[in-house]
Length: 349
Image 1 (cartoon, rainbow, N blue to C red):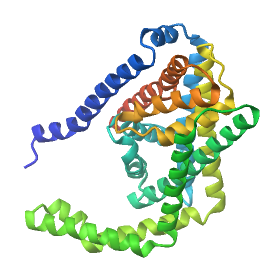
Image 2: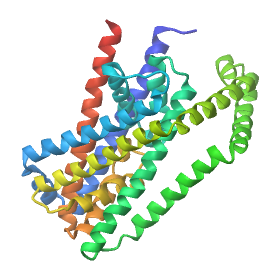
Image 3: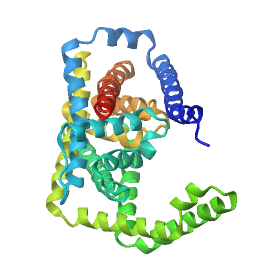
């Protein structure tokens, strides 16, 4: 029976998970600061130029908006969408992705659900568009990071970047593998989905969970897989659509690099744009962490990247990494939260 108490509990569960994740993220950041310079790092950040911090924050928000525009182009097709409602919807989905633990891992599903529901898209259509966008995001990150490293390498010697090169190689292998699965090995994907959904369906039937059984009924799952691949083909076969999506993805990564450069300048640390172009995408790929926004992993990766390619001290690099995350993550989360509140108010009116 659905009671108000049950409904309230269901609504609070994601919020509770997000709160716990954010508390853990702050704790991890405290440990990070302790090991990279302690009070000296915090003192350096306190002296940051507010104007340049604002520039870095604008660049961080612009990056997310650019990725939202990339997904809009991928979704477009025969039913163009846009306007304030779409942008608020995307930012609200990004808010969930940014604050929930494991949000980076499940981000595609979260965003697909967020943008499909209000615009009468099938979930599979939204997921197909997100898949294309994510693949272009991955390829762009690898390409831009490699380009930045090449420019730095040609201008001066670089430190130990083997971890980053290994991460970039791994990301490239993942990208090639996903492309192979959705283009050359679709039947294998279909069989895997049928097998897993069949197990869930039979378990739900035995336990009497009708709502789950309906969702994983074999015919329903076959329809969803066919719908997903059909939508994926529709996006991938439209070269203009793919090119427009890719261009906004690239702009997003360059905006993140600009945010990193601005954060460094705000602290009086010289970080060339080429070094930032290497560090920002590379950190996004190799700085994986289950905490909200990849907290901990990204800061460590940015610090290591700046030490290796920009020749700055660990203490200075850590301060830059923390300020960069303020601009590119915490400010973005605040903007996402405002957008979520505004969207809720508009839907209620």
